[in-house]
Image (cartoon, rainbow, N blue to C red):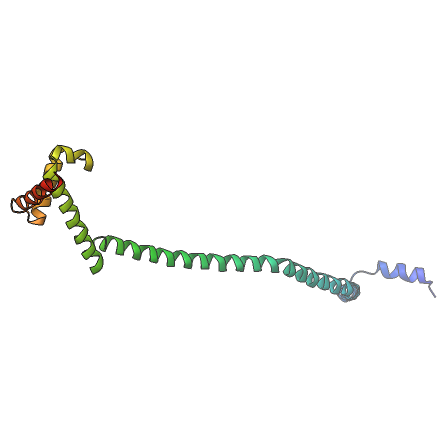
Length: 182
């Protein structure tokens, strides 16, 4: 009988037949699959630890992002409120400007009455002053030129409806007060 080493050497000298090649490839494939299964079994705890680390990192990252997201939401809310307030005030300002442009001449009935009373008093004061003084003396008092003072006197007389009718009455009242003073 042949020794083990001799039989092995004889086998190695055998020509490679198709069945031997297939058998060798099958065995090789089985060895590779077995090795791969063993490696996967060894790598199982590594994958589990990696998954747990990934979940932990995601939790920490989301916790770190939470304040930033909250800040961002608050800023957006602030910006919306500011924009709303700006729009409200812009509308109020525009409304007031429209009122101002449309209603600069509008006075209440009391104000109109008071205005006409004051204008009448002003005209009477100008007419009274013009009876005793000239337009050149009225001009510096009003801060206008003599020509303007003459126009103001004429306008005041026209507004009051005073022509020469009021002047004689005023002169007679002045004449009466003069003898009483002497």
